[in-house]
Length: 293
Image (tube, rainbow, N blue to C red):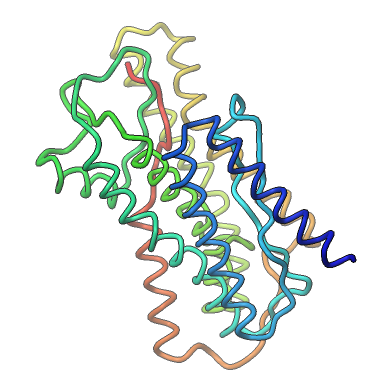
């Protein structure tokens, strides 16, 4: 009976998140984003079950569509920390890689369904990562946005962009994010010190991005207060993520990640760790979203 109730909770949250993402962006948006989230979380789940770890099915997180894009993503619950470094690496990397299997083809298809045109006044501009910018360049033959022109995204393309952003966030190599799991497995205790530096680095990204956006807004004719508001809204995600990591660290007793055991990673798994860093760099978005000027 308890198991049936638990399955009902997972199914109910999944259905609710399908509905809220559908209300936020339509059928194509919802189907694409939910496919990416399902594959991401099931990547973690299947890898964990392969090692016989006690892990839950995904809990999807619906939100009212007028607050966000209809969801805060999904999580799986590990009922005990993963102590084995080899298991930690594989479980941490499996989610992002599985999600990308859906996100990258969906991005290409979605961009093929999109058009290039003038940027509407007061529209929101999604940030360019290396991967996203190069994909647009390959399909449209120019770097966008530029000269008042950008891609008018099909809902599938926008959902794929959101999926890439979520993957980038998860791959931030700090604490108990997916990227943190990978780095802890690879670097062991050194990861605590590196996490502290990188945590402060998030604030530096917010500061630098804020200064650049302030100057862009001022150059576009906004007054000082308007320019400050423009910059603040655009860099707020980095401040939120830094605050969230602070909370996660506090809940873990002041450490970024529980200790791991076992011999150092073999060559193949070190290559996997390096590959995940490269993926993070390709997906990194300095300014996730900003208003057009």
